[in-house]
Image (cartoon, rainbow, N blue to C red; front, side, top):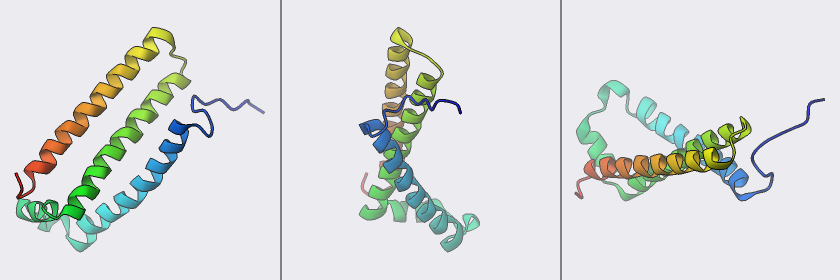
Length: 121
């Protein structure tokens, strides 16, 4: 039988966070899908409705957490996939830096868009 290999340290913090974010994402994605595809049909969605939903603090926080969690989950997954492919040393540090910067930029831009969709700003 082949030996199991993973860049995740089983029981480590990144391993645990990857699993927790996966569970959170499944739940929020289900909520998002039901709300925007069954409660409100896609053909009926308008900017005013999006603005109304995003102006509700609970919805705004949920969608922002969805953004931040999905970004972490994706960046962490890509990083670990690359580590599993064998990158190390300077390459590993450079890729980590690029992925962290890309993740931060994504969350910053997503936050700007989310705030623009509220009646607050």
